[in-house]
Length: 251
Image (cartoon, rainbow, N blue to C red; front, top):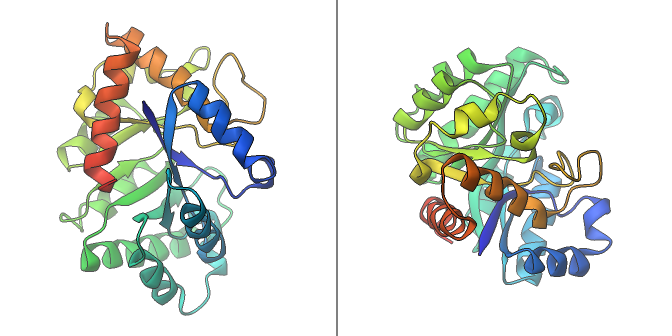
């Protein structure tokens, strides 16, 4: 039984047939889902979905792309959600210097403010990092009590090792399966007790479904490649990564 530790079920592509999406996931052995918010509004939507489905959990946070649009009381609104049952982490937060949809300085301020909140109320974080390794590591180092997961990891082994040493988990998505990806070389070097699996659906559909709308059930294809890389079995990978997710998010 696998946990998709990062999906966006409130997107129309998935929400319009959510029962079907969850049924297809179950057929592939994916039975728990963490629906990740990217701003205050869809964090609320994620929470509402978690109330409707026993096997859906949610998060609350502001993505770097949304950093410039936060309401003045966004931290208060997130804090309220984080006290709800089934809201298991603060996220999706972080930095994105690839698209730079929000100004870098604003991204860094919003990231730090949310890390302060995570430290204050002792909740794990789910963070996004694209082309921002140095600032991610520098900022996280200022909050040594905060733990969580590097979602949809795409950086180097050296960065992964530093994050693990800081207490973070590394989560792999469909991009692990892409042709010519460097990520298999990273994943096979990492300890399984620090790895999570996800889809980031409806994005980043793995091979053999690349280019299509992604679904949580395809977590299985990520787990199958991890099993191959580690000389393990899908059942062992499912057991270990599910235990990791349970421990981190207190599922």
